[in-house]
Length: 167
Ligand code: HEC
Image 1 (cartoon, rainbow, N blue to C red):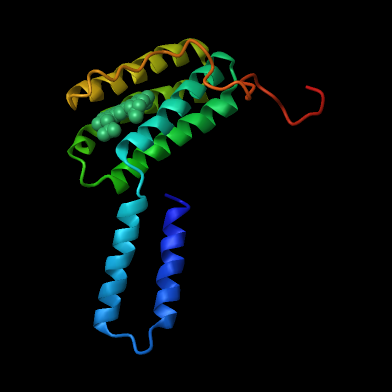
Image 2: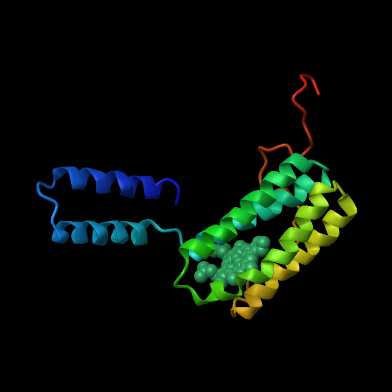
């Protein structure tokens, strides 16, 4: 998304510079071209979901390691992705049910702010149950999200680190 839109805009600007007198027709063509590029390179709902899945898993390991700064970052990424879905996937009927994820996200964010691991674990379960609730509501019941058992990557330390050296 972030890389595509600027590219579309640069193309729009270049094309605009090449045109001599700007006619209604050329603006129309340009608008159509930008729309075509947006559609072509637009991430699909499934692409967004895979990103959310990764942040969901990282969030778990951040929280159970009491790495609250990382947890805050990861939940921010999840929130951003759901916002992007709402803005981008306007033609997907499933998006109408997406708001059910907001209350569990807010409660989990509260547990993170309080640095409360017990609440974090509870709210994370609720969030995960809501992912599945939405999948079931949209006939994607075969897609079941669980509490992760292993970190999703091997090249990231989920324990807290401070800016002080040697800590
Ligand atoms: C709108 C309600 C909704 C919510 C809320 C939701 N999902 Fe999804 N999810 C979907 C739909 C619809 C699909 C199928 C997308 C497609 O067409 O590929 C999907 C697909 C997925 C996939 C499959 C992607 C793939 O290609 O393997 C994963 C993983 C996933 N969701 C994770 C999550 C997680 C984790 C959460 C919660 C943090 C969540 N989803 C919340 C609707 C939702």
